[in-house]
Length: 127
Image (tube, rainbow, N blue to C red; front, side):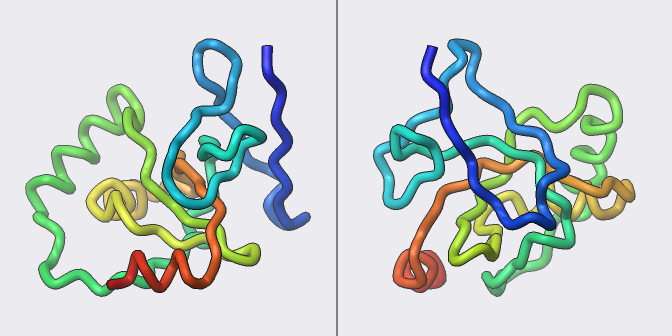
């Protein structure tokens, strides 16, 4: 079984780390990474620690948000949102409807797939 270390600022020590069913951190071939093997890690982050730098060209679909709220209340979040960690800051770049559903439900945290990146990675995601 592989072990991995996730280093975060002290103010984020109260979150949950999820590993895949085989006990390893999830892997990815994309830029950055958070796990020992270079892949992302799944963590639960407080909503207020996630910055949302992407300007959406359209508003969230309120019906989709409502459906997600109902689903999250019933069975929990099934697919984590994608987050890039750059120099200790967390930037959400997918999962806008899921994020809004969590906000509207008053949930304090959301499960995230976190990849470590550079400022250049973040600039690339903003294009």
